[in-house]
Length: 193
Image (tube, rainbow, N blue to C red; front, side):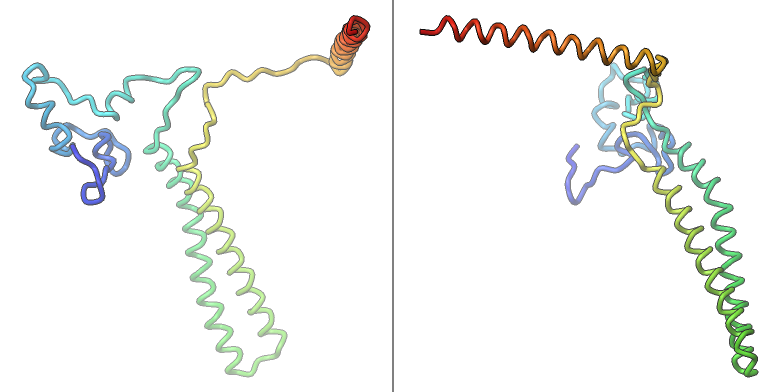
């Protein structure tokens, strides 16, 4: 199977659907599975797509996989209230702007106009903050930092006094090593003609 500009590789080539789900053999690109199906020894066996093999591997302490479908679903669930709140604030802004026009047209007191303008500014700020929070959640779905979820964390449970004693011991070891080096250096200088 050739891959290039005119035939780019897609998620389907790895055995994934557009939402990260595992594709059946019938949904895989024909060019990908043609040779597999032509081999009689593979009759009745599912095509070993990357997605299918990956799902059977499991995770270990040193390797893991990321379930993007689950991450996307969790993100959508977290995004929904933020987007709903942003939409409510946008509708409120429209109403406030209509109120502002009405007040300006009626030549209302300057304090009333300023109060509505302040409400509009606060509502616009709230919308920006909600959109930024939603964008952060959405971006986190695709954050591929190599943070191993299976790592075994080691915690230093020594007391401060034990840590200081350890530093002192290491300092003594370094001091002794430097003294030996100086001795060797002086002995070497004495032996040179």
